[in-house]
Image (cartoon, rainbow, N blue to C red; front, side):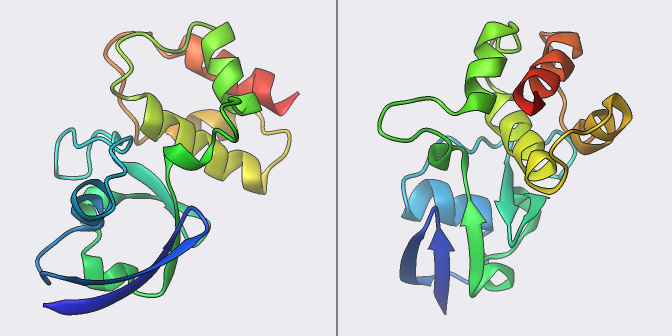
Amino acid sequence: MINLKISVNGIKHELRVEDSLRLLDVLREELKLTGTKEGCAVGECGACTVIMNGEAVNSCLILANQANNAIIETVENLEKDDVLSKLQNAFVEEGAIQCGFCTPGMLMSAKALLDKVAHPTEEQIKEALEGNLCRCTGYVPILNAVKKAAE
């Protein structure tokens, strides 16, 4: 067991958790933030992407103790007072959401990019999203959505 201090979506938490838990498990099981999805469990699909200390990371690859004292942002933090963020709206408007399984990870990877680069090039968007797999959209609507959100 470890003592974990973590800030998630602006809320500080102190938890006692098994040292074998991953950040993904802490978010989903301990904090009940189920927007972050487990896809492959080996860091290949990006469904579990969150922002940790300003960087997009695969939460399935981060052990809980590696997240100690970290600042985490999950997809649940994008919506404010039942109003979608500009990025979420762009995904809806551009048809970048189909089955929706990859969407939280895509949104968080895109947000991490847009937090650093206000008007990214298409190449920068592709690079930011390269760790996120989508089986439905063909990626063009996702690229268009990120471009639209950057306008």
